[in-house]
Image 1 (tube, rainbow, N blue to C red):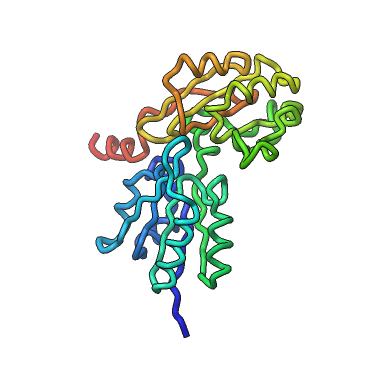
Image 2: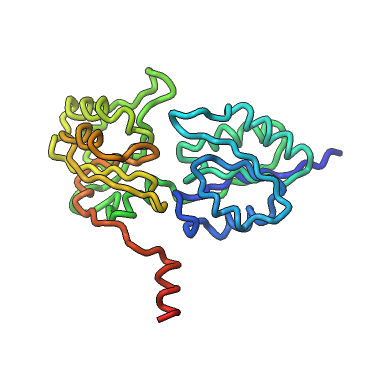
Amino acid sequence: MESFGKVFLVGAGPGDPELLTIKAVKAIACADVILIDDLVNPAVLEHAPATVRVIQVGKRGGCAQTPQEFIERLMLSEAQAGLCVVRLKGGDPFIFGRGGEERDHLQAAGIAVEVINGISSGLAAPASIGVPLTHRDWSQGAIFITGHGKNAESNPDWATLAKLNLTLVIYMGVARCREIQASLLDGGKAGDTPVAVIQSATGTAQAQLITTLSELPDALAKSSIGSPAIIVIGDVVRCATQPAAKTLRETVLAHLTA
């Protein structure tokens, strides 16, 4: 009887390696092979054993990408060889991470799969500048949505979303921000609705822009902000502050050496 290995679909979080979960650290520590996405902070690999084999499988919008079919075949072959495979994804594997497709492909071939959640950039980005996604005064819910669908027919219905009093958290929307803005305004969204755009959330290169829906495309064009970025639209952006200057680790070290 064949003895297959196991695949862990691991969310590495939004960028700050300190936001990696304990369960993710344990999975990385037992890995024989790690398939790591381009947006994952390589600092998380410090938890991997010295013998691990690391394979870069870059997945970044607008750039050359490793084909998804190749990634799935590679995970399958490594697991069928009896290895412990960790698929490291930025954010969370099940939020715009294609984790559902990968799990289905592996399980159909008889491979055991465990999903380890990570902090999605859709949560971490607004939090990094003090923006809650829900607020008793301004928003009773939030919608996570991609800036573009798989094809034209599956693109978001921005006109309908404009009518909902919910926070919009948009992934992969920078390249289409002008189209998104126009559709939301046409759908009745107020032009003075606050908007935040956060690039490389929680990482050392984080940058952010606070503007309004009517000014979004022009303000973004004048800024240096690009992908990867999260766009947050809604009155909750009124809570925005500047991100903390120090990481938790820096704060602790400063306290110990004081």
